[in-house]
Image (cartoon, rainbow, N blue to C red; front, side, top):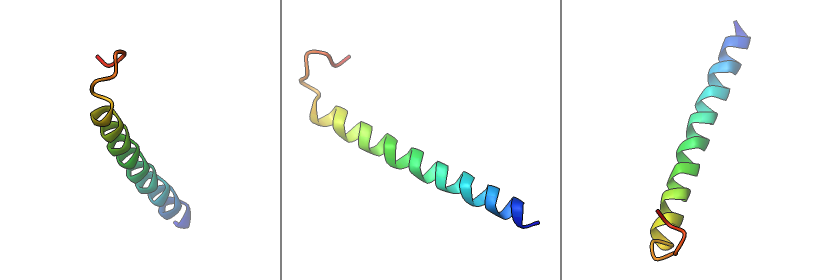
Length: 39
């Protein structure tokens, strides 16, 4: 029913948010590659 649609929407939003966070983190790591604390 409608609840499944809501759950699917939340899941998709979560996936999109995770991808955005991963992209931001990757970008930050790239910008701070010379950081002494970088792996």
